[in-house]
Length: 219
Image (cartoon, rainbow, N blue to C red; front, side, top):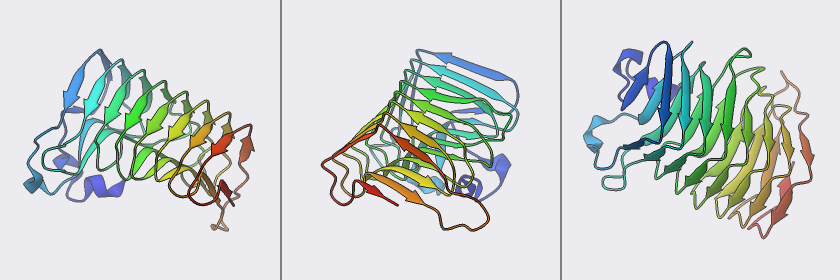
């Protein structure tokens, strides 16, 4: 997440930057195709700064397929997030990158994510409680979904196919229920608890993990 602000926070380039207040998008198309690679920055379509709110419904977001620039779909930093029924494709620096506080409301549901790199959905933030449900993530050269240190996420009903890895749960107690991980090139579900400062006690229940290149579930 820090790599988006490698220069200065005020220097963040994007199509829509939400500093305060609420942004509602319904049925919009945002594209970064053909962006100049010389910017040397990671450029998201939409960026939400602390204390703001974004509501994205039925939108189409596209990265750069011309110059293979470092683009991202949605970057949310301690903001309230509601993303539903949208399509995100061709992002080299992640489709949805989110860090949250415990009081932030984060809901990511019924979206389709395709051909991304770095991460499909990435979540971090101690004691934050994002809900990630009924998304379809496929054809991505990366981990489809990652929850990092001390996130308390609810991940259910997602379909992941033909990604590098399925779901990563890193040092947290997220609940992973009724997901389908199909034909991951590496591990299907990875649970890593290597940080002694916190407990890694996730719940993995009723998931279907099929035809993975390495392990189905690796703890």
